[in-house]
Image 1 (tube, one colour):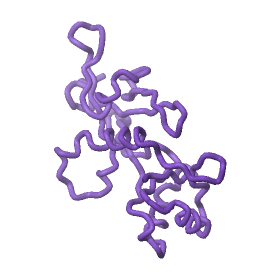
Image 2: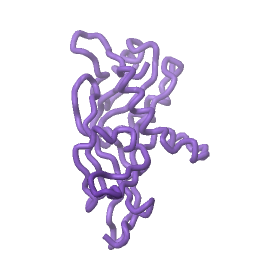
Image 3: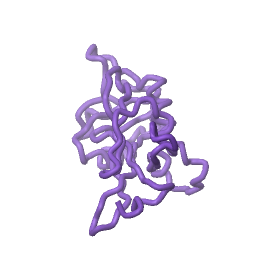
Length: 188
């Protein structure tokens, strides 16, 4: 089961590395940060950057959350293991876990890279106006959530999607490329 550890934004990688070096590391199977590709305009050119999709969150897969909690108490720099407010730790729900796996795996088959950091990476999606002018043609991770798109900002290269995470609705930003995979968007 997946659990979420909340820490200070920008300290996710420090916590992940600290957890991976803990004695008793066998209490959890995987510790990871879900990252996403984004385009940013630098010096008149669009550059691909990678940043945390959920700032302040580190995901841990474990069957022993209570033991993990005790280890976390000994680890400086983490805020809390997310729970339900009754001193019970709640796992990421199955539908939410499926959502996260889906957005990270969309291009995994095409990318045979052995880099484990790419395993939890949300790639850029591409969007183009539809042929009839009444919609979008979408490819990539965003395609699976087409009906949940709230808005698309082609100028800044992102889409806003409404999802349910942790039993509450929130928005997630997906990075966009345009014109069949070119980052420069044809000069726009």
